[in-house]
Length: 93
Image (cartoon, rainbow, N blue to C red):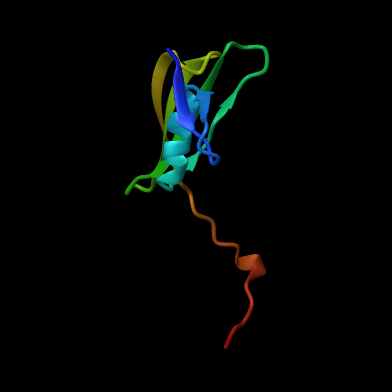
């Protein structure tokens, strides 16, 4: 599969599905956690959201090295714990 987009100069530039999705999620204002592991042949896009529990939900879309082949979709949830640092409190009034 070949994908192209028009760059800022109006010229067609080759891209891949991972880059297109990553740019679209960023433009839409999603918090992202993208990455890859050195020596492995895949990379991922991670879309981070906060649920009402409160917890953090991360949806990872895994791609082969070519950036066009989706190999896995995983969703992770982690509880959010808030900490009050009373040792650093200061009087404001």
